[in-house]
Image (tube, rainbow, N blue to C red; front, side, top):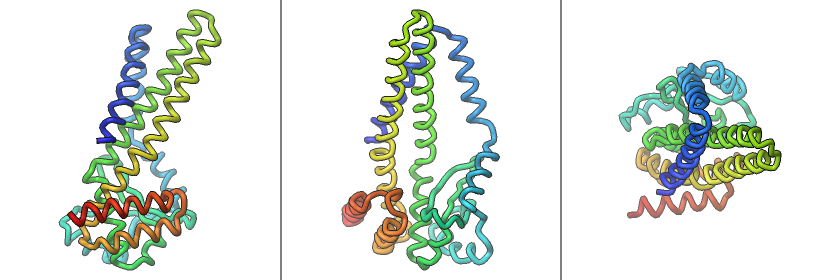
Length: 246
């Protein structure tokens, strides 16, 4: 519910900005849309390669695949492209889609968790694909970029026509406020809701709520603030228990 409201507000703002730009210069809008389309449809291999290099990631080896294969077979899930993150400063797992394929990256240290907790990690990440979370994230990111850059461009055009520097500053301020506010709600409203629902779907996969709760607390203890405060993790656990007990 909250995600739909957030997405609707961001898309509405971005749509209004595009409409105002269209009134000023239709050709400019068509040109901008074409650039966005080419960017989104182009292979992102170089960007992905740089990210995986930063994470010091490698694909799962045979022993690691044998270790996790029972989880996918039990739940009749297709095995995604699996990555091991070897960067010692990164202690987390994340899911992403690349060229139509599902990918899951797991910190190497998570293998020390043992089978139950590692399966909970994988279940949580696979649940993000079920909820189409990666698609929602991409849509919101593009909409935020369109809204922010479009506001700045509109301000430049309007201020240049009237030779008004305060007008330019006003639109820059609006763009900044939109960017900061939308990012805040995306991180602390949209994302937390996604994670909480992925917890539930993941626990349904493993049928091991206790291991899922222990996994969340362990990651919070080791990964720190980037995982979210302990209060947020406790809220996620409370939500998980409330849903699973009904």
